Image (cartoon, rainbow, N blue to C red):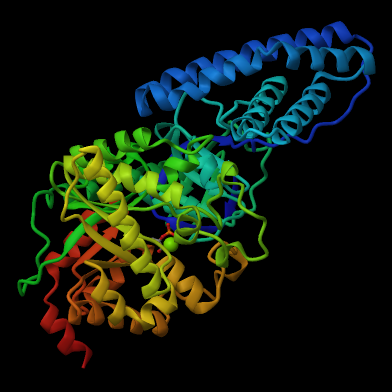
Length: 549
Ligand code: PEP
Ligand code: MG
């Protein structure tokens, strides 16, 4: 048995085999070969394997996201079989007497470069596809799974770190736990683990090799430890813990259907945060009162090109219909910083967290913004949708946004398309600037939702992605607590309601405090709803306030 320790970001116990996540990056070596025919044969087999994977992905995507979004996997099959590409690879193998990997990598680079230099935007966009299929063939040549997890049973995913664009492609049913060498407590890997309610450990110095790959392990998300090839005593003890957890979950089940009301009658809405439609099952299972944050950028991250209005409309409509009249707050595109999609071709920046991201992209690329707004507004005819805008810093921005929303509404009227004329508009409060002018902002919108992840990052000047700063990252910093109070007070004084959708909203040690500040809503990972409901039901707010005096 070997034990590795890191920082736990979600509690719980998972027992299963480890799958070391193979990054979709290959460092390809040029190797001289004698038998070029054998290399050409290896290349042909890798192509077949890639095509099989793409067919399977196509089937899966049709079921999960529909025909239109799945088409990309058909297009990729054609690219793998492209004659010019194949000729180039075979020619390099034969003329230079080199390995197939090298020939594929060189061809991929050449073709991607050729496409990216083309005039028409459509062809430039194909460069990313070339890179994708090249990686896939390289993975097939090296025997790795293209999505990085090679298993037919649920596994503990061990990785260096995971980008949102990588996690979005993973089959969530196959993941028991995440353990990463890097990543910070506030990164999107941690958020994903919380959404899925699975134990996760970050900053764990575990080798990413066959030393652990495929071996039985236990992740203890209370201790922040992973036990590889555990001995019998440990295995028995952890299996017992797993059973106890199941019992706790069963107890919480009894709280389903209950109202979130304190002993002295104060009510609060408990909503769920989601990243895509696959999370909807968790929303219903955990009895959420609505969706308080739909991180719509994950639609963009899961796509190789700008999702069209109709593709987005289908997704938003599905969410609105599934929630059947309960509130669904869709946050507009929050891309940039750690959430990158290549086709946006965002400029390289020194400080991306303080760069061109979120609403700034939408305001500088109004066509992208308007496409999303049209899709959301059209879907609002099928349920109770609200729109929320991220990274706001000024009243002027909000006024600009509102006038764009009005323009889009007029266009829809002209097209005779239905939408909710009274749709609620809200903003995220996640910059210190927005906190300081919350009174003026509240006059402009229907609601606030506090993004404590970014608000803490920008207030404490601590990069939320930087794991080495976790010891300085005090999520309960008095500055944040005072800001939270200011935000709720300003909202209420100026006619808006206030919620929290950052990770702090799920902190059970603060639930009473948020009630005392009179927050109207907390939006949290679905698995957190019932534990918070339990605290709400056990709280007497006036007594809590007295106890603090
Ligand atoms: C936040 O910043 O708290 C938030 C909810 O948004 P995200 O984590 O997606 O940046
Ligand atoms: Mg944020």
